[in-house]
Image (tube, rainbow over all chains, first blue to last red; front, side, top):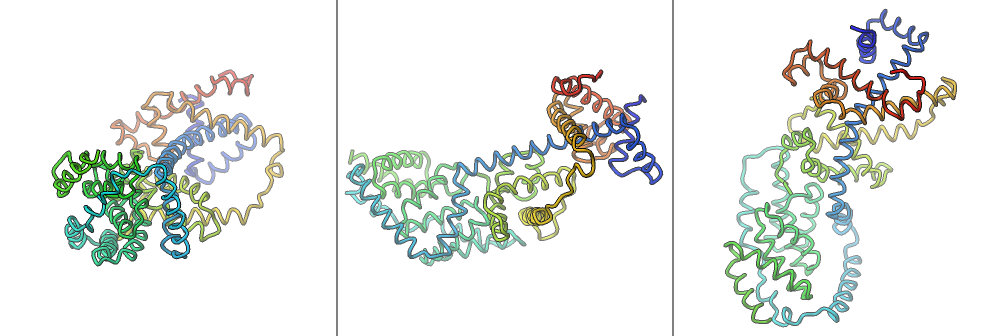
Length: 274
Length: 194
């Protein structure tokens, strides 16, 4: 074992606190009086710090990358915005928001209105409150077998969806928003939040929740999200929305589902209007 | 999105440094952590900064096999606990930020030189860690970052403890030599003969 190796072992033992009192004292005396040894100790300490820092940087990069992805998805805006709508001054805020939204709609309509979709009330003719998957969703949430946090999570979501089932959309929305604060990736909750927004007349907001789900092939209820997204786009009635509705409808009709028949009828109707 | 990963799957994902697991846990814990920071004299931006330290502490625990979830506890709750402790430490640091100036302990020039050299070697160690061979990188990481014992490393790498002990010294010296040959190091230490 050469000199370097011997010192490395000794220095590591000191750094890890593995020297007995006598050896520790002797080591520290040498550290005070032998500048070459003190330099070596510093070098080894800095190299070890560098190895640790390198790993920390890797984790920082990983977290930054997750953070920037969430930022691009609007996560940080959502998490701040949701509680303010749910908890405080909803009347004043929503009234001004509605006035502003109405003005925006009027201005937009002057430029973009596409008579094809709206004149035929395609939304009104096709929309019914979601009840095709509701029994299955509630059944899954009511199923027993889990304990602890997972059971509490299911119960919280079940209570929120029960309110939707009871047509209490305002309370359901608030309950879903609270749930999503804790579980922002729970897609079934996002779906029903979007559906509540439709019932409350907030079509733009509904689109914000439903369209990402409509494009998520891993989501169990993707077809439901697609169908209601199509209807929302038609309700919005702008040219670009009309195009988006057609695209989503085409996706919906690629495979059989509970919305297939109505989807085909809607597609034919849209074709006849072209 | 993968909303159905359970705690165990997220922990494995974090061990493998997977983006999906990181994002999933981040999004699950950020809101409560942010609310906590804001309630305790912080801001949303400070909460975002804190998340980095929270994940470093959490992943270090996972890497060092020190993470133990109590019964009926969850990874989110555990992570929230880390965040609370870290935030309270930061508050304490702010309150007690009356350090003894370095130049009262050592001469000012000495401190500057030592500090500069230390920082340079630290940076170069990071730079060259993945330039030595992968076996060395793994070994040094397991020993110095994950605090694994030689016997544990021997088991992980399917080698003998004796071999690992020798290999560690060789890897460490290899890394040190790369550092000494670096231009920045030589510029700062022109008399260096290594």
